[in-house]
Length: 244
Image (cartoon, rainbow, N blue to C red):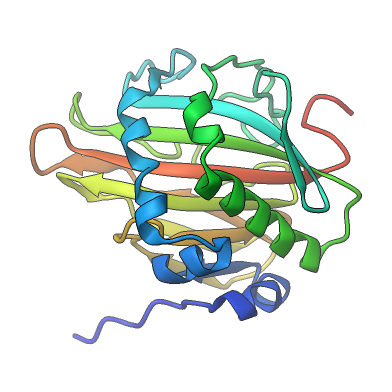
């Protein structure tokens, strides 16, 4: 059986891919190129995923998710961290956890101060600006670890969804000792879809949140300590969710 090639886009193609297909998948080396840093510099961020805090808000009773969360505002090339705040989504976009103000521990200051972190967020915000004009982007950054300590971990317990923002980035930071975690992207108002599994650290999935819905399938352990780490970033024009 021939496995179909993944639908990768180059950095120069990202804006067109978002406009035409609603999503873009980017190789790790192209993510580094886009951010103006090296893969080694991005990989230097990865150990911070070993220090995330348990997510106590999971309504399915699970303890398989750890996370940190911080917010930023990008105006042109200026990216500044916003005062620490709760994460909020309406129930229309997150039927499981919407309507709750969920306060998580912030991303570690050393990570926020890293040039690779700043360059990555700013570069992806610039891509968003090429697709949609906005006076400022209100950016939320989520570090996630989904583990298999209890036998199964659910990257998207809310199921296939939109996030209620303008753009979403899902970056695979690492996976170890697991199977599953297939990514699925489908047209919000059409029949087309793509299914693939991100395997290489710093592979990027960039989404137009109005055009597509997305989910990741559960993970199961292949070895002790199995887990999947991701960085999820969202961009919303005008305000953070819950502020307008």
